[in-house]
Length: 101
Image (cartoon, rainbow, N blue to C red; front, side, top):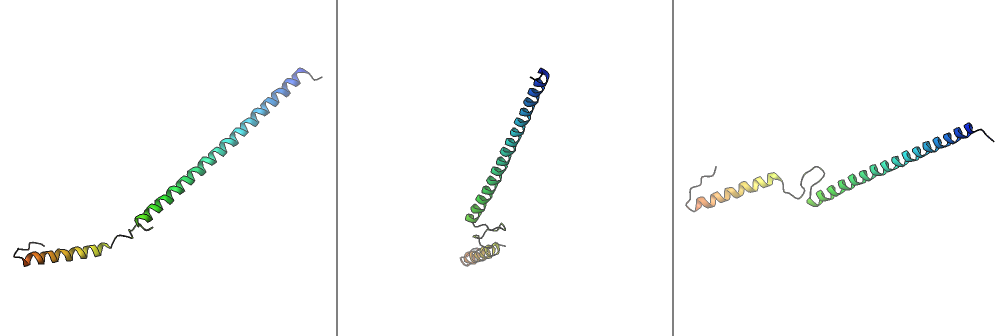
């Protein structure tokens, strides 16, 4: 038989090896969980980006940030000036004094 000191050392070494092995397994599991969380976060960010893109396309905004459905600002200004001018002509023709500038 072996002496008690060598048996105790063998037992200590095997317990120590089991602790190291358990620590390594725990570390690997932690790394896997972290990778899963990072991947889920990437997927959520990508889904949010797609949702924002779809929402902006539904509103008619192109990738440059310009509204595709809205008329040009210049055309709006021209139409407004023409309508203001026609209103002032209409009111001036009815005996009113036109004070528009």
